[in-house]
Length: 109
Image 1 (spheres, rainbow, N blue to C red):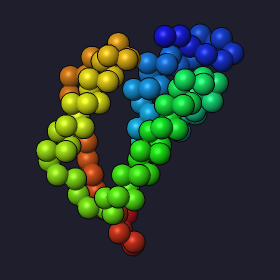
Image 2 (cartoon, rainbow, N blue to C red):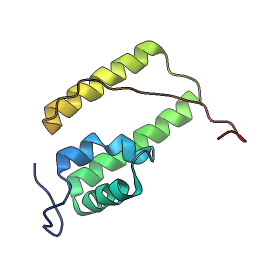
Image 3 (cartoon, rainbow, N blue to C red):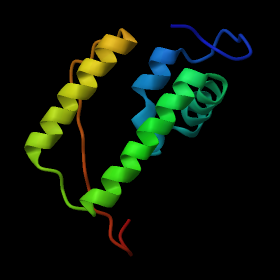
């Protein structure tokens, strides 16, 4: 895979952007990293498409799960699937993945 955009040497690679899509969707990146990833995704049609698919998946899960906690078995299957996908498509090796699902209620921080 390659970088896209203006050709700056500090550009984000597709593998990095795809590996961090859910961090971006969950607003768990620093503002600087968020901006870097969004610049790449905006300039890269394949990454933009993947971002859109993942965003729709996240919204669908939120609607269908209704804020319920995911069963441990589902979390483990998701971790394994994400790890396999990143390794196959991103050329990255993930040694450990942690997924946290929390219910946020009004008035809590």
